[in-house]
Image 1 (spheres, each protein chain N blue to C red):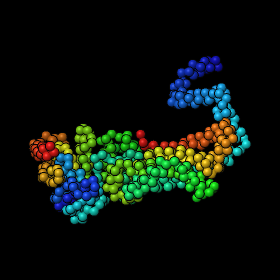
Image 2: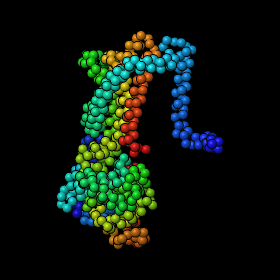
Image 3: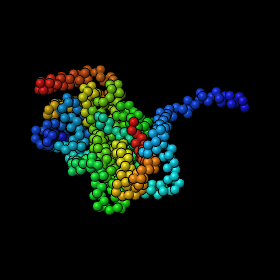
Image 4: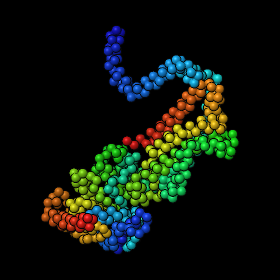
Length: 268
Length: 261
């Protein structure tokens, strides 16, 4: 027994860096930065005792309370529903319009200025208009999510399709490929990496749109919750909601990235 | 037989009208069945344009292009192109790239795979079927390009400076391989090149073109016996034709430089 323990003890420090430690060494600094940030936050929270900067532990407490009371779950579900519908529509419209713009010069010429204008302009400027059209329904939130996310997807998809190596299209034509075959067999796979970059940007913007829409017009879901506690100066609760939003954003991004990695593993 | 009569092609200016460049000016020539025709000329002589017109990839302004008396109006199953920069799909493995032309033409999947496998073997890429293009050397990539063109079993093979992007040693190996394959599977070949050795080594005839506008200067017979190889390049005929090409190309280059000064 003792010998085994000794040998294990000898082996431990040697084998650890080789097998276990190495995969983590890349994320080591990130982890340290995260832990350091939390410690700093906690310390500043107690030291400064400002109402707008509650210690981190209090935020976790508020989060825990939210979960226990079940108030967060319903709101998360409501928010996610708006996000899913809005982003789903953005994805379909964005890919379709983007593909047409990328492939056909005339469509691009006709739509480019509008897509650019909407991409640059702050979506919430149109809040009153959405309000006028949809009233206080959930459709407002969906409209805002679309407004936030669709244009970047259109833009990236159009650029992706337009910049596909013309030699590949010519190659396909030389074998007699028709427009549909060129699109499905060449243009689409070739532009997937750039299209996915747009989808990821769009996803991030969709989460922002969801919260902004909920806070400023729709008054539902997580945004409405944040708005309510914000007006009551309940900083720890606001931060707790912000954390939930952050987690949603990270999970959404992770999903997109996983699909992306599956489909574009050929990229260097 | 490929017949080219009075073929002209003008590239329009940026504004889409007027002051265009005459890339090809009233070409006349014929390519016999199973003939290996190499085309050589300085840059700007329209040799790539000519190839793309025969492939049916771009329209032309004047004259006619006929294959067995049928006018060319677009790409067709009787022709396949090998491209200078390979034009392989980077997301698809070797087998999928080789099978691409067959799949586009609606061949059944099992047959696609079988034919593609046979051609992968023919060009000596056995064992690399599942590799991506980026994992292959330039020479191997062009062998994929050649296999893809041969897979659709065209009667006419159009090759646009296929070995131009490769280093000297790789190029020589591929020339030998191409000649071996051409010996087994006779096809009409139009082969664009800027290498005089390559033009003489491969061609039954060498078509010499002049630049701006592209015209046929001369079509030179290459009476060297086949199979050709390293020994061929030492023969007097080979050297003479090569020298003759150089004299002509040299004077064109000199004229060209004066013209631009």
